[in-house]
Each structure stands twice: as C-alpha cells, then as structure tokens.
Length: 213
Image 1: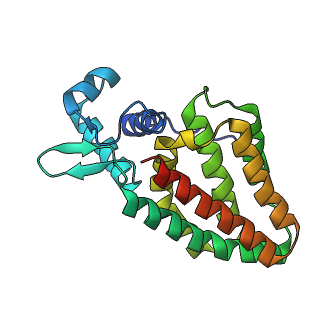
Image 2 (image 1 turned 90 degrees about the vertical axis):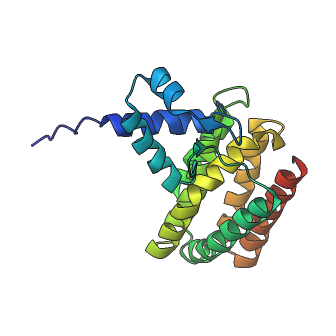
C-alpha cells in the first residue's frame, strides 16, 4: 500500500527557506533577521518565523540574543580553530573504521561528482551541501551512532563557516580534486596514509579560514 507523504508544515517550509538563504550568503555574518522583514518577505506570521528561527538556533545557523532577536553567527579565530579541531578529531576515528572495512561510501563519491559539475558562480549552498554530504558520509560509514550524533551537533556550524569562507577555493574543480585525494587515501587501506591526507586537509582548511579574516 502506497502511503502519501505528509505535507510539510509552515514551520518546516520556512526553516528550509531560511536555511538555504543563510547558506547561500543572503545574510552577512552578524546580521540580524528582523521579525517584520522576514514575515513580509516570506508571507508568514511572527510565531512561525520565531519557531523556525529557534530550529536554526539548534542547528548552529542562528544565534538568539536576548531582547535583540536572531543573528547570523560571526566566527572569530578561536571559533575557527575549535570547530576545525573538533571536526578533525571526530572524523579521524571514522577514517580508522573505514580503512578497516575498505568500503568507500557511495554518498562521498556522489558529493565529489556534484563538485565536478558545479562552479563557484553557481548557487553557493550547492557546493557547501556537497562538502557537507562528503564528510557526513565519511562519519556515517563508520557505523558508530555516537560519532554520527556528535558530528550532527557540529554540522550546522561547519556548513555556515564554509559558506562564509567559500572563496578560499579558486575553482569548484579544485575543491573536487582535493576531496578526490581524500577518497584515494582511503582506497589505500593504509591508516597512516589516510590519516595524514585528512590531517593535511583539516590543517590547510584551518589556515585558509584564518587567513581570510
């Protein structure tokens, strides 16, 4: 028996729309999303907007300032170092498990294909999503529910940080080639080789993010 999917609620629709706008760079770091303006632009109620904004707070894409409203996070040097360091620690354990099984997650390969087909002039959120899907697949293939849960708590901040700092890649192809090197390191079935490749990726990312400030 076919079951029709339930229609998305107004909050879900608005949450998705705001998330896409944030990751596409429609709002500047430190910019407040004003209730009245957001309600007018999305033809919604203040209650729906605030509920959607609260969801995005839990995802790390917005912060709530008491008596001021919701603001797009602005990452300082300490934030960049902390986010990339924690990401590396989580992913490092996932790499160990992938090397043991020898199974390359298909979602990671698909994400690299998206990077190859994209350009930096296209929708920025598409490339950010591809980067997210690549690393999400690496974590998921570890088979550890605790690693996945821990990474999920950090994922929104990682996406936003990458969205705000996309310019460190010269081309989308450069981004694709860098992630292909990570895939090849996993195919080696040698943990030190894979660990060193990912370690270089994390450290290079951190340096580029800090240099752009």
